[in-house]
Image 1 (cartoon, one colour):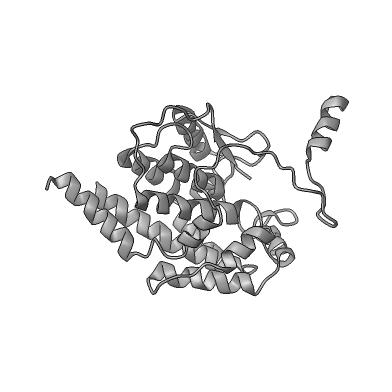
Image 2 (cartoon, rainbow over the protein chains, first blue to last red):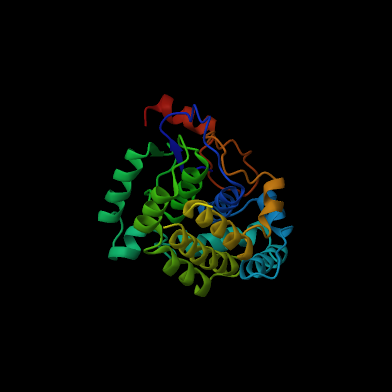
Length: 209
Length: 67
């Protein structure tokens, strides 16, 4: 399931405190990563069905997602995931930073990301063949940087730099595309959640700066 | 209050108003843990109609066959 891992086992995290709101941010990233990385299995789908939301924008889209999850089956979501991201030949969308930024896969944005990953002690999981700039990998990396899954949690300015360089410059466009994709039914609200969450992250990073 | 603490509080408040706590609390309860380790062993049982899975057994086969 995990697309990336720390190069070394995380150790010696004493003294780092991850705040409640940072845990929540990480969980939104994990939710997006899990839904986008592979079609949700029965267990995850059941979890999603039970999600509730308040009247905030995010709460509303999570309610839409829960309703979409209740209206679908693992097999249907699997098919949807396939036509969106895998496809015959290619899927409807190519969820890679490099593609969104340059029009091609495996271009400079991927090289830059690999450089930063190596500096931060993050490696691609051994059983993953797709390039690291997949949206799900990047969400996992953000979650890991926040909670310290790859070592020590990194501070906000560093998170902000990573977010701006590798995520904010294209992910909002991708989530908008996902929302509007022809094959997206269950994934439509996933795109909506991504859009809303990205704009929250953007604003929050600006506040912290 | 230092400027930094104020910014931190503002941020916390902002997240709260943005509804960040909505929904995911439930997800947390069911174990959508963010800090899961890297136990990335796909050992899902090969259910009917699930198609090809690179299970431990298959990996072992490749290894032995020197693919």
